[in-house]
Image 1 (cartoon, one colour):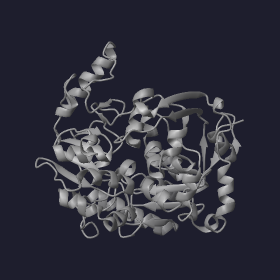
Image 2 (image 1 turned 180 degrees about the vertical axis):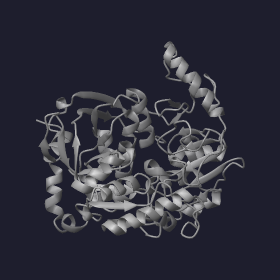
Image 3 (image 1 turned 90 degrees about the horizontal axis):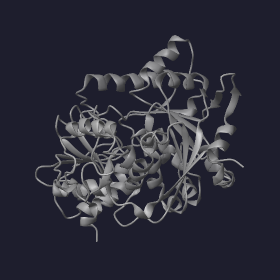
Image 4 (image 1 turned 120 degrees about the horizontal axis):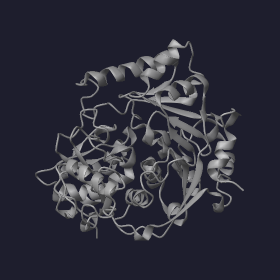
Length: 467
């Protein structure tokens, strides 16, 4: 009797030390231009070499412009240097690079599953905290620091202390206008931003089984915002259908045999989790954040401060500071809050399904005159598919900017950022102070909700536009 997390962990233990740490073999490693330069330099200074080039891929995504002229014009000097450095480092080590001119370039956590690079039962790391996204295919995936990046490149392994396990059982159908982003925000509000600390989280139950692969990727992506580095979902028929035409090499050649093995990857008994949480998805409404953590959320008909523990002095003090930054007051109606910018994209919500949901809202309508709105596809593949379906034209006709793929305004370090005091309806994953630009104010929500807010020029429930 054991959990899915335990099974994958045990299968990758190479050794154990006296400190209680396990040496974990790493099957796949994803590299991007911002967190890797020091790791490559450290590896070179130590005289080490890349241990297994096919187990590593690199992509330019974080600090890259998303403008159409980016192949010839990168205004930011730091961005130019980071992009050039990753090119040099990958050329020197033989690591495969998805550069800006590559048709499959995109956000690392979007392209990795698209490429079939991440497999059920595998271990995957990346120098980015939202690596848990990839647990949606039944892998153990987590973010690592720069020194760990160098260690993985040199040894294909990491010393890790095994976390405890948490099972989140989700039942109940999501209502019309409620999406995986709302579900993720609701769970974070329920267990708190530190509720997952020290745990590896598995999502399961009939609601999870009913989610598309894109929705599962969104749900796992937000696990880190609940304090856990790991979020995963057992592979099932949906997973196998997604992977069938994407996997490469031996996995493609022997897919049926692999699928049989992957089908055995599940938790034997849910009573084995160290902590169990039951959640009813039928109670979830479209949500929007009002504070500076993803747990600070409420329905669009709610008010600023809803759900906060105002009777606690520490919480009141936190809220006062956060709301001063946000330019909001406790009790203010959320539907009255105006926005300046609408952003659809990121590794949370930059996939084709997300763009379809947003396009359903904006089709035949126009963005409010006071709003700057942009759509940034999560990958080149998503961009081309959206253009082929006519979604890009829907957005352009409505007044959205249609961009090249990249992290864009999620991280605000690549030319796509908020000005001080600007307020953004965003599909990204973090609403921390200064996250989208110095002094920028972020409200997290689903793609459909961002689209609705862009049309109205204020925080708006997407159900106002859905039949």
